[in-house]
Image 1 (cartoon, rainbow, N blue to C red):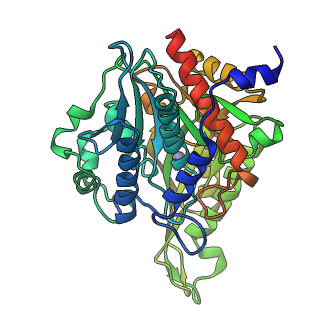
Image 2: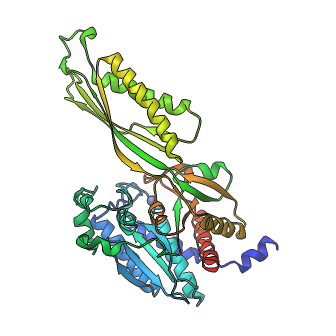
Image 3: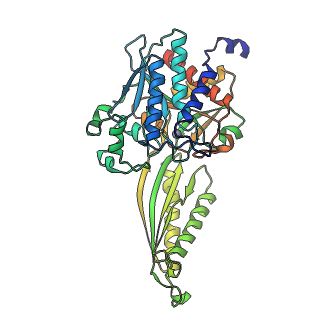
Length: 415
Ligand SMILES: [Zn+2]
């Protein structure tokens, strides 16, 4: 079959409608720099979710907000089967971009509308989801997958509200989060379209990224303790400078990470110096270490090497070092059936695919705990994300949505 014949028979979303929706949603929380600021639980976040619910109602979907504050719009299937769930999130980082999350939700809406317009019901019910507070630690999908613990309700989100207050603001019920939890096996599949936020697809000369899995992420708080003393009267040889130790540590992390072959990354992104005076030798530095890889044991090996380097640095500077783990997200492979559906849907459209690992965390990794989950990635121009400069070309937006539609139809027929 020629690709032309295939295309003419392939279902297609209404690209103009989708692009117009993206533009309209980007006006909510728009920043002067051309980006979007919709931190979870802010006024802009609430307004964006309301706009998504309006779209859902217009499309004839049944709208509900679960106890966790997530928005769902559902469409009946021909059978009373577990639903195929598609979507993403509409919250953003402060001064973020127009595509991160929003693309996945609006493309999912477009898939639902396309099916409605064709007067077609699929076998499985279809649910469009807009998860809450993805950027603050995948909170909405954590609640749905039963991985959220109530003690985190008091944590303060970027918008300044606690997660508990935020959930209430979204129309959820933080006292009864268990009502939002969905059991393993209760969904047929979860598929999320998202921008890549890197340059892997482009470098591979492809148009669609088929996500094989999401990386494991681990954080540590690293503290170097020396002695704070007078910068003018303490001889260089008598100093126990915690910042000097921290500086050597930052360099050592980079050396360890870059000298070990693989796709892992390591970052020191935050550093606090105490007491923090121009004329005081730093007595204490607290910094963060973040390591990511597809495999947990790779991270473990890297960490052991970094820990050895940290002790060597502490010895050399007369300081003490402690390294305390603060976050551990397990690696999360996607389901082979979803990967296959995504890859075949892309091939049907004549698009080149590239199998890849996601270096960022996504709601799909929580949804993987309750059903077969997978992701479709589309290119980000220059790999820029979490920035007003975040950009995805119109054609890639359209490709991504069409692949999502094709994947839903394939999964509907095969699951
Ligand atoms: Zn996102």
